[in-house]
Every structure is written in C-alpha cells, then in structure tokens.
Image (tube, rainbow, N blue to C red; front, side, top):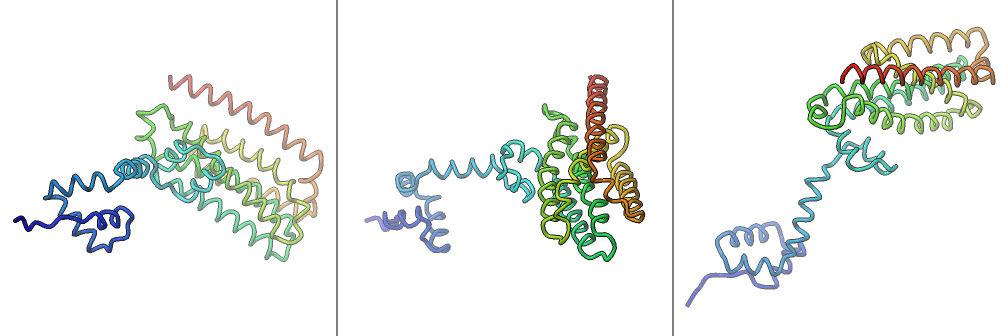
Length: 267
C-alpha cells in the first residue's frame, strides 16, 4: 500500500485563496515539485490564468516614481509614464518643483519686506526651472532613446510637460496659502510662460545648469529692483502682461525655428 502523502483538496483551496500559513504553503510547493499527481491537482485547483495575468501585469507595468504616478492619475498614458520613469533622474522633476515651491512659499510668507515682490521674483521661475530640470534629467536616457523612435529631445519635451503639470498647480497652491497674495494668483502666469519659452530657446544652445542660472539671476534681479523702487505694480499692469504675452509668441516662433534647424541638421 502506498504511503505517499498528497495535498488534500481543502488544502489546495486554502492555498489558492492565500489562507495557508507561510510554512504550510512552502511545504505544499516543495511537495508539488516531486509529485506529478499533485501537480495535476494544482492545475485544477489553482486559476493559473489569473496567476499568469498578474505576472504579466507586474512585468509590463513596473512601478514608476511618485511623480509619474501623480501625473498618470491626471491622464498621462501608461507607456509614456514607463518611458519617462526609465531613469531614476525623473525624481529630479519632483524634487525641483517641491523645493522651488517651498522656497517661494517660505520666502514670500516670512519676509518682512514686500512679500508681493518676493513672490513675483520666485513664482514665475518654478515652471521655468522645472523645464530646465526636465532637460537635464534626459542625459542618462541616451542609451534608452537611441534604438527607439523616442529622440532625446522628444523625451525632454515629455518631461517638460510632466514638470509643468506639477509646477503650475504647486505655484497656485502657494498663492492660496500665503496671506496677501490672492491678487497675484494669475499675474505670474504670463511672466512664467515667457521665462519657460526663453529657457527652451536657450536650451538649444546652452547646458541646462547655465540656462537655469541665467534665468534665475536675470528675473530675480529685475523683480527685486522693481520692489526696491516700489514699482512691483509694473509687472502686473495690463501693458506688462501684454508685453509678456507678445514676448512668449516671439520666443515660441524662435524655438520652433531652432528645433526645425536642429532636426534637419541631425538628419
């Protein structure tokens, strides 16, 4: 009479439902390796299709950084999220946006001197610096983009969109939290658009760190100089806002020309 032990049906049901203790589950798995009868029973007791579906989902949809998980909830396609998350440097976007937003909030909220001037000196730079960080974060993906239809510049633009998707809401939140800035909630948008497009144009010539430094130095100097002269209202006047919009249109055209030229040269 055979004395070989086999896994009872009730044990298989508990195993398939995940109710077995770890030691018991390990024992069952070790037994099945050498027992053809129990392997056959396992196929009937365990839904192998769902198991493989779970494995496939895990392999084809790896966990992406929190920055991209937030953007995916906002509508970012899964394949783009996985591509952007191929390098750990995508975290630079989130870190840059959070650090810049906190710096802006603390500086505007705690300064005893012209919080409106400090806010207008820093808030428009948050999206622009996110763009610079997005371009800088693509250097590690040259090997990834080389054999694919995703060029390094396309990756940079995708990360630019990701950075702006975080930076603009974060900066709006600053305006809500810092007392006395409600009147500036919209005034920083057009200057920020101009700075962002100026950064994109400069990035076709210079390295990202140099572009970020130049943008920050020039804009902060102008904004604080107006604050010292008690002329911050100049930045929010209709004429200035129209000027920022016109400059953005011109910079967008220059950027399009630069990209077309670089693409033709690469071909």
